[in-house]
Length: 250
Image 1 (cartoon, rainbow, N blue to C red):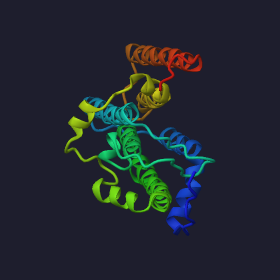
Image 2: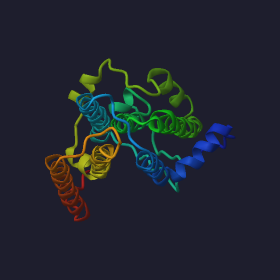
Image 3: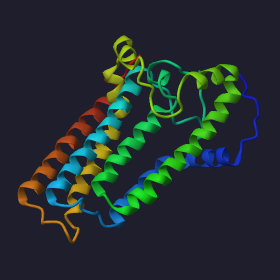
């Protein structure tokens, strides 16, 4: 392994490196505390609120779709090494040829969709800006690491590929020409949709606790329970397949 030149990180990168270590525990705690520690707000009439819920789900689903494309085409380890940014090669293909940070963009889309379901001011004014800042700091730490490790090659990559929102030009060709690995998506991603869809269903129930909301009907309550049971069964099956080694890929 080639030694990485020592680069003195700037304050934002130092903060990002610290947040990188604890993001897996910090993010869910902040989101759960904000979403269920504050009252949701209905988006106008009950009909309008239902439309907002559908749109919110679609936005989160678009984020999940982006995550699946990233993982299924060319996946890189985002967990780092020893809870620090790390990479053994510079990945420029797949969705990484269209965005340098597609997984973080996907996560923000999932979060935005959940925020739309909750529709409370704390989600829009606190949680979304906070998560955006945390990702900005983490990306800064990763960029300084990658610039030190890969030098001019990484600089050229940054000039070609946008940092955040995926460049749409050529995206269809990338997807068509890539070798999409569904088993890898199942093995790597099964927990993510289970987590955010569970949160979505809980938010649907929670928003009926709002003083302006109509009480949840038995049909609505049973539908939420049945959908959650279905995704829980799917999660359990995929997890057992993974632990048995039957989802291993090359």
